Image 1 (tube, helix red, strand yellow):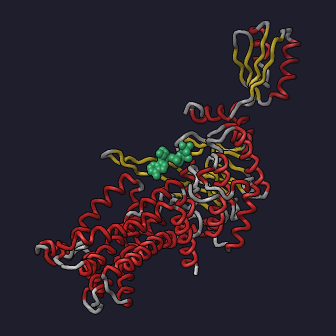
Image 2 (tube, each protein chain N blue to C red):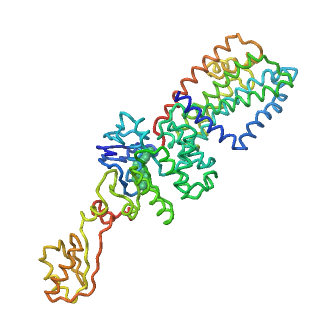
Image 3 (spheres, each protein chain N blue to C red):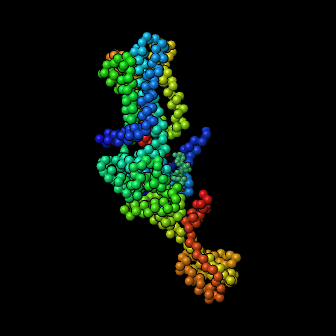
Length: 251
Length: 317
Ligand SMILES: Nc1ncnc2c1ncn2[C@@H]1O[C@H](COP(=O)(O)OP(=O)(O)OP(=O)(O)O)[C@@H](O)[C@H]1O
Ligand SMILES: [Mg+2]
């Protein structure tokens, strides 16, 4: 099918360019490692747990969601650079599928995230993280959807504002409250009621709850299907939005 | 016709502080481009050349008017237009970190070509544009001229019926420009239609079979470079004379002189065609007994055409 072929074409080019850049590869590997090794011990008292193992059980799911959001949310900068170089316009005069232009790039972000996620999970295991494979696979699905969603939002906004100077403050402003009210690094169990009410409106807080339950061996909770549904729907919407921006005029 | 447009229009709204201003970039353009010709769009900065090209290449939708490009209707069937045309943007289109060959293969594949075929075509165009030597280096290491040649190769790798080249030679040194002209002529000889923009008078004159002069979003003149020049003033003959007043008397009533201006040391004569007029002028002056000093022929340039049509010269606008 044309859309699959075109998506593969865009995706394989993006991955090739990513691997060619050694800085990216090193940062992509080191950054999650640092989070894992430095943060978890620090958080032990705050989380009210006694062992590192317990801390990882709470912290790793949050860390993964954070990486999924942030890694993908900032991919719009690369897109603006491509726009400036004329690469996007060059693609748009060909009959290539506009959805593929979008999906191929977002799948690069999804794959990057999954590679990081698998690495983090594997490294956390010897420190005492304990998970079941089938639950973790569902958690990865949730993470993949989050990455796709954020990548699509980033692309759509980048195509709209067309300048790094506008994109940077915009993303900062949006991402900070999202991060804080999602209970990403610390669960909201001990938060005041008003913060919990705000968090209900944050789709990522549902996703984090779902991922935590999956990592803690409770795949059947409401959090899991609710999180998957909310994130899944939003992903479809934002992908459509971003693909339309790709089809529209871009200078 | 390879391209036919009627009343093509586009305006942009841009925000400046609090006000929104409307720029009428293209204000009703009618064009007809024949198959196999090099058609040039000549005009100063901001004339609307790029905007017109971007409309014809399906990158932006016109506000009004219609166009048929390579046999496909621009509004009803933009997908088919895309399959039949190539487009090379004014600002280039290569990515720093990939090589010319990679760019060409990817681009060919975006037109649905198989990988093996894309590789074969990339090798062929790299060869044709004398790029084989640098083909596997990253684009960021290319010179301006090499990079521009990759751009053009990208535009024609799928063998389109027509290719749009937006300022193919801007920023190139004279030698690279001459090379580029040869490349463009070669494309035409392979029966491709070439639609290019330029603000170099010499380029429009030397390279294009037909040109349209554009100013403020409108076509102000269209034709072959020679016909445009002849249309405005014919040729100009400056003659140095010993007796200017007597010369003016002799030639003032001659029907082959369209217009006559008196200068300090001679006359300026506007004639339809210098080749046939000069013998007549000489004969008249001779029989009138006027001594002739120098004789100088001035052919009108495209700049003169621009001047008569717009009241400005292209060089100052
Ligand atoms: N995306 C846009 N938004 C707002 N104004 C635009 C946009 N694109 C073009 N314009 C305006 O439309 C007019 C025509 O621009 P265009 O790029 O077509 O000119 P041009 O003839 O190609 O000029 P140049 O020789 O400088 O390339 C200019 O006034 C330009 O500022
Ligand atoms: Mg232009």
